[in-house]
Length: 594
Ligand SMILES: [Zn+2]
Image (cartoon, rainbow, N blue to C red; front, top):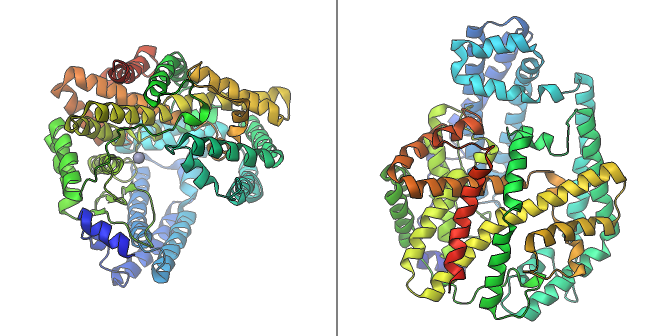
C-alpha cells in the first residue's frame, strides 16, 4: 500500500480520480431506486403495449416502439455503468459488489420483458421489414434495424433455439471452463510456476531464462496434451455441427457475418498479409543482429531490445505529450481529450482493490465516457493513455448518434485508439535524441504491430487448417495439430527464426481458438485499416482530418464498407491493404539501415 502511495504521489496521480457524481451522487442516491422502478414499469408497459403487434405494425408505431426501447436501454445503461465503475476501483467493498450484482439482475429482468422485440422483428417477412426500414420515419434507425436482421437466414425454429440455449451451459461454455481450469491449475518447471509467470520470462533479457521458460512451457503443455487435444477436437466438432445446422457455407462465415464483412473481403485481407510475410522475416533478421546472435530461436522473439528508453514520465508530462500530439493533428480532438482531464473523467492511480489493465467505457450518450488506467509512468503507459483517450474521443463524437447507433462495428472499434497511439508514438519518437534509443523504440512499436498483423494472420491460417481438417479427416491427433501449427508459423517466419519441433505444441494454450473461433483476423483488420488511414493522412494532411472526424462521429450508424467510403477506400481492393503494409515497411526501413 505504502509503495503504491509513494508511486502515485511521485507521478502526480493521487488526485486523478473520476467524478461518478455525473451519474449518481453516491451509492445512497435515492435517484438509483427511482430509476430502477421506472425501468421495471416501463419494460412491462412496453411489453403489454407491443407484444404481437409487430406483424401489422406501421412505421410511426415502430418508430415509437424503438424510441421507447432506446430510452429504456439508455437509463439501464446509466444505472449499470454507475454500478460497474463504482465497483471496479474497490472490488473488495462488499456494498459496491452487491450494488453491481443487483444492477445486473435489473438489467436482465428488464431485457427479458422486451426480448420479444428482437425475436418478432427477425421473424417478420422480408418484404414487410424492407418496407418499414425504407420508410422515412425510420431513417435514423435504418442500419440498426437491418443489422439486427442479418442473422435471420441462420436462425433455427424457436423450439430449436430454446433447446440450444438450454444446453449451452453443458456445451461449449463447459468445455471452455474445463480448458481454463486445466491451464489455470497447470504448474510449470521445477519451481511449479503459473502460465503467467512462464510467459513473462519469455520477455527476459537473459537468454538462459527465456530458454528455460520455453522448455518448461512445452513440458507442461505436453503433460496435459491428451486433455487439451480432446478439448480442441470437441469444440471444433461443436462448431462444425452448429455451422451445418445454421447453414454457414464455411468455417469463417459466422464470424464474418458478426463483423458485417463479406467472405471475399476477409480473403483479400489474409492474402495481402501473407504475401508480405517478408516484412516480418526482414525484421527478425535485424533483431538477430541487434541482439548479436548467430541464430534467432523461437524463444528469442520477445527478447527485450537493449537501449530501450526507461525514464519515468509523470502524469503532467503524459497529459502534455498526449494533448500536444492530438492538437497537432486536430485541435478539436485535443479539446475533447483535454476534457477528460479537466472534468475528471479519468481514474489513474494504482492501488489495491482496483482492477488492473485499462479501458474506456462509453457510458451513455447523454452523460460522457470514463477512462480507467493503472498509471506507472512507463512509455508503454503513456501509449495506453493515448489509446484509451482515442476510444474516449471516439465515444464522445459518436454520442450524437444516440444509444443504438453509437456502437461502432466490431472491426472498426479500435480505429480511434490505434490511430491515437500512432500520433503519440511519433511525438515520443521526436523527443528521443539518442539514435540507439530511437531505433529500439521503433523496434518495440514494430513488434507490437506484428503481434496484431502477422501473428494473428498466421493464427487464422492455423484455425483454417484445424476446422477444415476436423471436417475432412475427423478427430485430429496432437501430432496433426502440431504439424498445422508449425507449418503456419514457419510460413510467417521463413528462415528468420528457427522453430524447434518442441514449439509444435504451443497452439494448445491459446484461448481465442476456443472462445471466439475465427475472431483473430479482426486484430489484423483493425491495425491495417488504421495504418492505411495514417498513410493517407501523411499524404493529404488537413484534408484528411475532417473526414476522419466524420468517421468517428458516425459511430455505428452504417456498415464498415459505408463508413470508409469517404476516404476512397475499398475494402475489397488488395491495394488498400497494401497501403497499410507499406507504412509498416517504411518503419522497418528506418531500423534496417543502421
Ligand atoms: Zn482498445
